[in-house]
Amino acid sequence: MTHLKVNNQAPFFSGVNQNGNKLLLSDFNDSKLILYFYPKDNTPGCTAESCNLNENYLKLFEAGFKILGISPDNELSHLKFIDKYNLQFDLIADVDKKIAIDYGVWGEKKFMGKNYLGIHRTTFVINKDQLIEKVFTKVITKNHTEQILESYK
Image 1 (tube, rainbow, N blue to C red):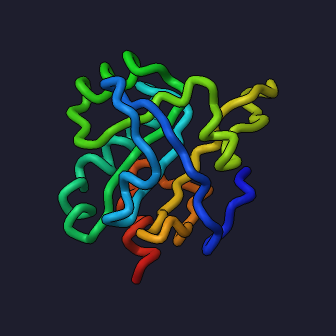
Image 2: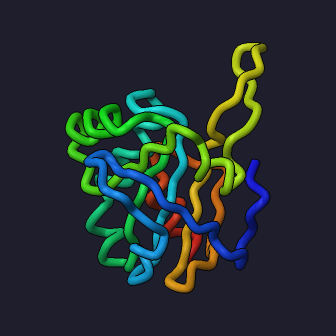
């Protein structure tokens, strides 16, 4: 569970997207950034969340948001995931989990009575000054866009 709160400085990140291109937090200083961490490509919840954001891409863009997803999957996995669902935004391959650790979303989880390490599904909205405006730890995967937009009303 993340230690980051609203009004905290967003941790700097540098990562590689599905095409091997380097992306930095500062690349998104011209808009609000929806930075969403998800456990794994092509799993039901992660697909629902990514597709919901993608289906509302234009609505979010017109509202001043850009979208960036991060998971521990590698570049090839991300490329296939993007191609399969025609995602219109980049995904960072955080295979060493550095960004997830910096954002406090990598940690112990429990599933079917077993403990393991993984990503805690979390979304941060980061403003142009690189300050965290919103933190969503209880993501509604099938309706994440509305969850985000409602929080601004």
